[in-house]
Image (cartoon, rainbow, N blue to C red; front, side, top):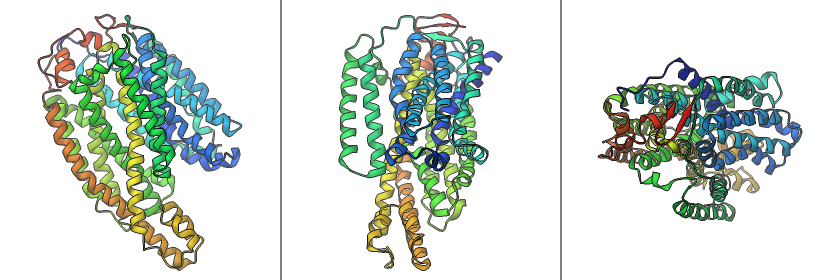
Length: 547
């Protein structure tokens, strides 16, 4: 089926998109909404330091670890069915988290939320691919989904701040309940059921290996960001990589693999995945550092900082919608190149910041960064899903979303570690003489420790310490931004060259899926064409979709 004959989505599909965008927003919102609640939560539940870390981290750990398994399971038992299961689980776990009487209960609730989020994520994205058969509409729908995903991270702190002004800390979790009820009511009415009728059995050993490998890698990189190079993150990372390698070997030998490794031989899939990974590393890593700069160098409160993060999300959102229209005319490869070049300009602006720059320079830089990188992320994850055969839509979506989780963890860990090294170097020999010997090592280690110590020192000494600490942090951020400029430019050239034969407007759907989107010319098999790929009602060579 080509683009000219592919049926265009109607009212039912657009209502379905709204039903899918809301849970996508909540999945990412639950990662950020908790941060503002930590002080009151700590007073009520009195968690230990280790328990507090697990409360904040276990959600993201479980999402990253379980997503590939849940995406593949959706291909087997039905993506709408998985979505409904995820909605019930997410709603119940949200209630458990809201009324958790102990820190241990909250940890369990957060883990269950992560498991439910791993069900919701790939189900929403793969259903969008099934509902929108027209390539242009599908690209727009994925952009809407990506926008909801990013908005969840931006509005999470705002929603949390408003709720905490009027209610107890658990109220931040109850936002999810009415959304999940809406999804359970509307889902069966507006969403098709899509599954692979020829799917084999789920290999539980592969599922366990996938979970273990990703959990260990994510834990290792997060510990690097917190503790630096110590034996625990090194051991976790090494074991995770070994299990990951064994997982790949096993998938190549199985008749029904959890993840078909042949997908990575597809240029569109692998190049888009690699570009998406690096994009997310720099986008979320720089977002994390910029948020720290606004709060600890500029001196804003968390809620005020969240308000100032909106311009970057708005600029990125507008750029995504503009980019999907431009991509239809000139090709996605050139939009990739342009977006990464704009990001390089943003990093060049960010490289000019110092401790006295104020909010204007950093918000301008961040807005340029997001305007360049968010379209690359949106188009990249769309190409990953489109490049996969239709019966593997759920697992392809899960790979793309798992990449985002890992990229975010790597970005925070790697860029955070580089900044810590730069900060420590800037503080060496610069700590004021009035700082006690017992505190000198801590204040030279990180900015929060320096700001806390300054409050206990005489006013003049404390002011000197704050000044040199903020200078060192800002200088480290500027150095990271300066180093990112050539990386973005090199990535822009590489992505444009490798994908320049793909994503052109006017190609047929099967050509765009098999040749244009994948970057492999000459491939014209249409067995994974638009009908199967999009979950058209009826049966294709690859999958079955029913209303």
